[in-house]
Image 1 (cartoon, rainbow, N blue to C red):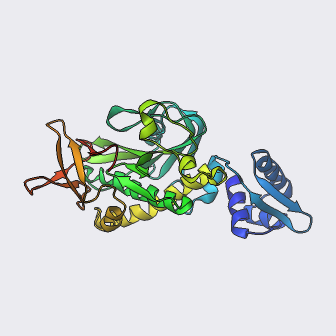
Image 2 (spheres, rainbow, N blue to C red):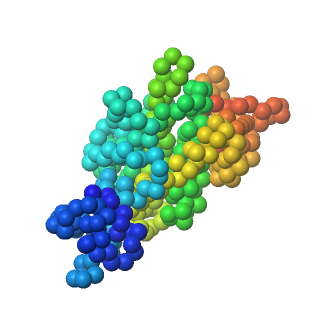
Image 3 (cartoon, rainbow, N blue to C red):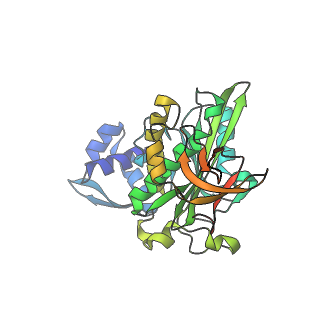
Length: 329
């Protein structure tokens, strides 16, 4: 009920009477009054005036299932939402929940993650109360060969969400990182579970650096946070960022399903692809090589033009790509 009350308060934009809330929710005035008290305890600023009702003044950085749910505009994504104050890995949690009760669009969010997973077996560091960790579970009907494209779909969604909320110039480092000023601000990890020749589930995990003020060791020159880049801590509302990422993803996912490839978003993706038409180093286990990044295929592979003029399709998961002069070009 808290999520519905928050949504009604936001949609009103002004005072909304207790009677109207009672009628909308089918509950008593006492029930509404108790929820308002709980919301105030959680950090919401709610103004209440006799004969006028309640008005939401500010929510601060309240990070909860109810707050995220009240901000979602989706039809499917995140409509089943599980929130943890602390967990090991949201991807692991999401996979378990999908196995117990499969439902496409389930969203798992954690305020603190202590065993996050990164690409190629690396860990993902999520200091307490400074980042966003969420995983979205899907049950696609397309073939397993197409699942890797969902990493790029999510990357475009997160890139749009962060740019719109912060005004930062965010770019995508193929295939799964969002960068600002040459430093990583977000990582994406997609995991697929298969049964014979069909997908039983796809889990897309996202980690966003929000309010870290510093990074350890080698990450100092490669990672950054929204706080460091915007220098405006009061605007960094984790629930707002999380909900906007999911809202954007549903739109991009619908577009993807129309063709089951990236043809509908290829132009947009390449417009924010870092290193486009610049020299990159492909770290292939069979032997690294240099070439010019020429964008992506409609299947999500990176096109790299080699010195002899030939073009190689680089597949995500098999190799890493770096700029010649650091983490990105």
